[in-house]
Length: 262
Image 1 (tube, rainbow, N blue to C red):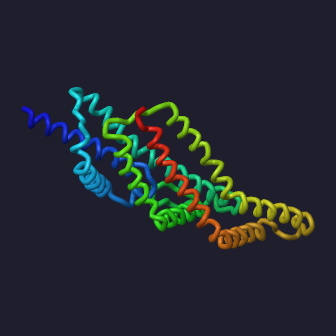
Image 2: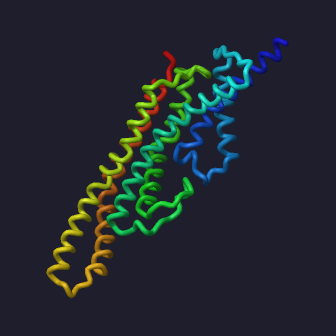
Image 3: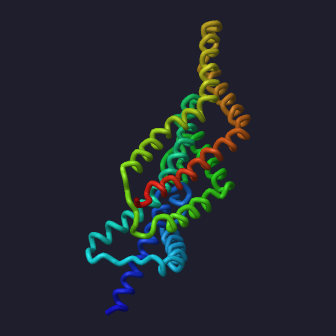
């Protein structure tokens, strides 16, 4: 009887551990990509959970609840840790892609959409370009490994089954969601501002030379200037995107602190 109870506790502990890792694969950019089969995501979660379980099961001291509802509740709570951490990274990726959509709107690419291979949704051309560019920056700075390391360290701060969701956490997430538009606007503002000046100049040109078809001249000119500005800003964007993503990774640590009981 004692052996059966002990085995049940270990199985319960393992699935709590796996749920925390699985949350990362549900929402985090790159990890949640539709390119990666669901079977691979589950296997990776299983392997990482197995390693963590072998390192923590002796000191966990957790007992499986008698109620199935309580088991599901604790599993959802553990899943939410990975979801919250992945959501923070998702916000910063979305802000950069939103900046690309703002630029698309000024360049005239808004009507041409392509399929985002990560999410499967349609995205404007420059928005998709910046999204892929952000993925490369994130991988080059080993952001995916840093995120997994942060989640792994969360077991030292928040033991399995010890999560506590407070109002401070929701306020933090809502503030970061609102920052999405601000960050996207800041990234796009230099190019948007330049293209707005080009629109004004084209307006004066249309008044000065009525014989010129300004629509035929203006659209290729704005596309050309937009690409030149993107090319010139690559060096700055790499560092700026790295700073943004680093802030996102630091805020995942803050998420862990907000979820810490007591």
